[in-house]
Image (cartoon, rainbow, N blue to C red; front, side, top):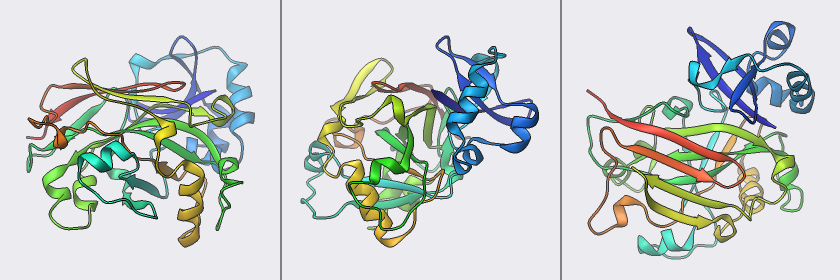
Length: 284
């Protein structure tokens, strides 16, 4: 099943995406009981809600709504840096024994087919294709063996990075949290459809040209290791997301460097999920 979040006429909602990319939207008693996708996940009701929506006819064309980040209101956004060897090598970083973890805030996100906002303070706006794991069950000190049981679905992320702000100091948070720079979508594919997240291809295309191409089996720290490590220091909760890292080929490490610019079309494609598409807009 594929779930997504959207907005129409100022009202936020969620629904099930059909094979024809139409939406069966949650409304009535269902929407009152579960007002957003996060509440569905918190209630352990993805299967129940999915069956209910599957029994209905699609009622909305995806092109007629404004897409929101799949989870517009995650409690925690964990991002993993330098988690593919080719990306680590292209930046000259040493190997480490532990994942590099930093955070994003919900306000930094944007949805599928929406703008990625290049801030007026910088022209060094970079792309990063990443696989997202959406947490479906909370926990603390989760073992590697049990980790995948805590995931309810997967999605795509373009972790747009403002590189000069990222490198102002050793803490990356400023360059990773400008408003509307992190694209999240187009939908969440439930975990039952992706039993093994290590067999996926991941690609970035900028104006149709391939910039990044890799496979998720090359993650240095795979998802079970990430969940085990993160839950050592903080509990995970339903609706949290883990943005698992980007492969090599980012614009900052090319010669010459390639930055996203106003009007660019950028696509992140992950096999088994789909294509996240955005247009870059320079902030006035």
